[in-house]
Length: 352
Ligand code: C2E
Image 1 (cartoon, rainbow, N blue to C red):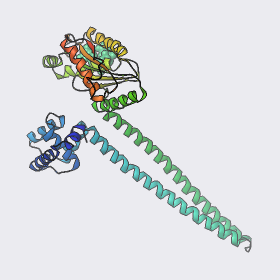
Image 2 (tube, rainbow, N blue to C red; image 1 turned 180 degrees about the vertical axis):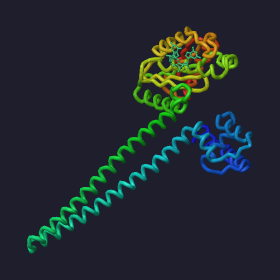
Image 3 (tube, rainbow, N blue to C red; image 1 turned 135 degrees about the horizontal axis):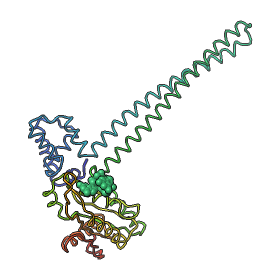
Image 4 (cartoon, rainbow, N blue to C red; image 1 turned 90 degrees about the vertical axis):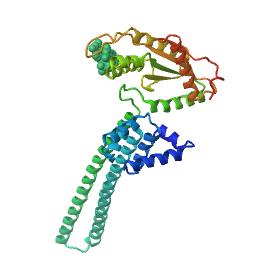
């Protein structure tokens, strides 16, 4: 379930939105599955979301809203839903693997039991038998031994296959988990990863009494830039800024694409003065680079960024820290852009 939807379903208007979603699904003859419900809640309640835009496109096209269409929209825009689906699939295939291994183990156990019984019978009657009877018995035993060996070999090979399959599934799930946390345009962490990391980094810094600083970055005049040069070139500029932001500072830190042309970098263990120097380096690097439009080689003009920095203070929550950094970002914008500002250190005005 996405954060937007989670918040809606816990708001005072939860039942109203839920009814609206069901009504819209009924009007458009959409099955009320859990996934469709989540998608159509976006449609009625988060109108500016990508999911709502995609559903509108399907409705306008007059095509029926099939499960496949719903799954495709969810896979693209609801990484959580995709992750859940992938985990369910992986779980199903894991349980099939385990079933077949247990069947093989059961069959090996039965063979081994029968072998034990044959050995016991043979031992009992050994004393009373003549030489030819002993030979027959030895043959029987050697056949039984061969059978048990074959069963064990089959079991070993099946266990090896299962181990490979588990390793493959683990790698696949790891990839899905990474995708769900990554912004596809820039390769930086996405908003979800940022929100989670900010929360844990704040808690850790407060617990250990260590510093932690947040920087938020916005590309200046990006809307004008997009209107002049088009979305494709706009995307290239976002990728370029992301590549610089992604290299800023020393590890470990998390650089994320926070929104359209907004970025954020979490610096655990760092004080604001160090982050200021790092972000100023990024700002200068970006401002001094002449980017070209790939199709025509024209100069794209100055690309600059504005940055706001806030250091975690006692009493800060992730939200108040973000607000403080945002406030500093807007100070940079107000003071002429292409600059970096640090939030006031007054924690009382920032406490949530
Ligand atoms: P990309 O096009 O995938 O390029 C990835 C990296 O390959 C670049 O990282 C750069 O190190 C190298 N590279 C690609 N093309 C060239 C080139 O023509 N000359 C040189 N010297 N190196 C090249 P970088 O610079 O960090 O850029 C990251 C992304 O930012 C690029 O991804 C592209 O999407 C965008 N970008 C960077 N510079 C420009 C530009 O001048 N015009 C446009 N339209 N996009 C740019």
